[in-house]
Image (cartoon, rainbow, N blue to C red; front, side):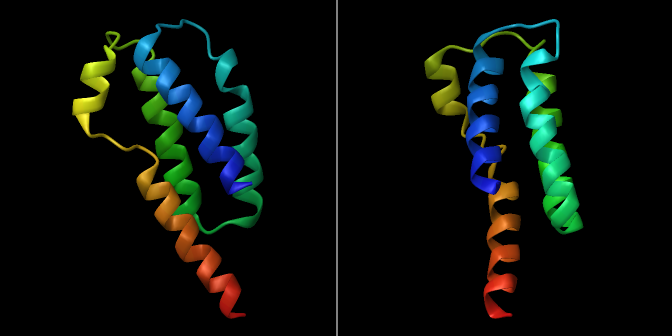
Length: 95
């Protein structure tokens, strides 16, 4: 499930950086995944997923970025989420 979230969020973030949208229908799948994550994951993982969704939502109305601007921005909105997931998975592996 974490992997699916990462794939969906990365796809949507790339889309948000290069396209403007006025509707949230593209985010339905992402919010469904967050709901599933909320059922089984720690607060840190859920908060990180919510932050990713907020970043994506905030990126849609922002000015579009060129590929060069994206490359040099060095922003990774998925990093905190993936690190939180890795820590959580390590805890489960120790059980």
